[in-house]
Image: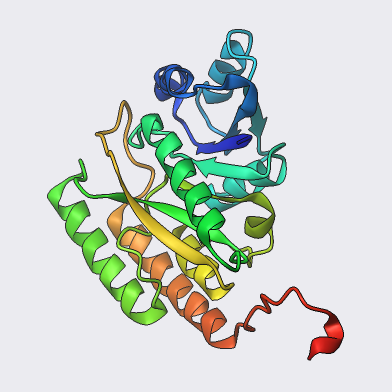
Amino acid sequence: MHCSIVIPVLNEQANISPLINEIDRAIQNKAAFEVIFVDDHSSDHTYAEITRLQSRFPWLRVMQLPRQSGQSSALYHGVKHARYPMIVTLDGDGQNDPADITRLLEVYVQTVVKEPVKPVFCLVNGHRVQRKDSGWRRFSSYVANSVRRFLLGDATPDSGCGIKAFSRDCFLALPRFDHMHRFLPALARQSGALVISVPVNHRGRMSGKSHYNTMGRLSVGLVDLVGVFWLGRRSIEPNLSTGDANDS
């Protein structure tokens, strides 16, 4: 399966080379993959480090946004410019394990093939069963995930996990807004998707520190949560029929 791996990054200079080398080891058929780093206008040498490594890894691509626009914008532009119909996303801090890429793709293919009526969108979402974050961050994520599941009904235990697999075309059809990356399972389900959670490995940060604090995440998350809830109440049920338009 041809696949584009999209990785938004911001000031991750020290993490770039180790992550690219891990991806290189994890990819079996390198002719069927590309990796797109989207630099969210970093203030360090992240962009230069990626371009330096392109001569060693021909499947490596890089984009740089003209101004800092946020992770959702970086993700959108990476997916929009991807060459292949299948997308896998990773965080750029090294906490997601590239060895899990193959597993997510296998689950996606098995799910789509066995469905009698293929869903409009199938999203395979990583689930960090044993998180390597601080106790406070794990607790705040647990509360946020619980509230989100209750209000949005997305039945996803770890919506914020960075490693996901989905169709490029269907992702581009979803509502687009800042912080949408936090709600992809809910947005996918609202579009008629089948969403599956798969346990994945989780590691500590390779280098540097998180770009988000708990209070910042909660403040924007509440506003976005209300918006996604509203979208869910107003969404139009997808028509999965393949029959003629006159059938209705």
